[in-house]
Image 1 (cartoon, rainbow, N blue to C red):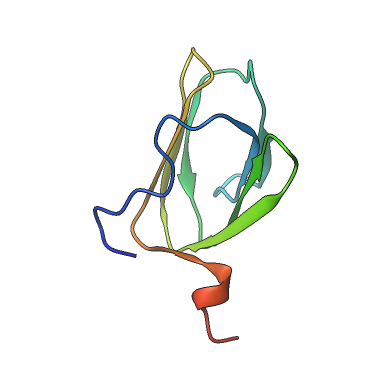
Image 2: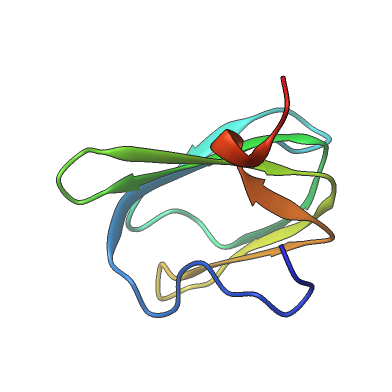
Amino acid sequence: ALPSQVFYNGANVKQVDVPTLTGSFGILASHVPTLQVLKPGVVTVYAEDGTATKYFVSSGSVTVHADSSVQVLAEEAVTMDMLDL
C-alpha cells in the first residue's frame, strides 16, 4: 500500500482487532481511549454484517479516541491476499 493510502475513512465497523507491543486486543464501540504501538501482525476489521477483512501491518500506531473512532497508522499495510505466503 502507498504511504498515503486510506482503506477506511468515516466507515462504521463492528470491531477492529490489532496486534500491539503489549498484546493483541479488540476494539468495540465505547472502548476506553488509548494509544498503542503496533507490532508486525494482522489487523482484522469486522464490518457491521460480521464479514472480516485482514491486513498485514509492519509497524505503526493505533489510537482509540473518546468518540469511539479508531485511527490506525501503519508504516506498511496490505491485504492478506496480496502477500506471497
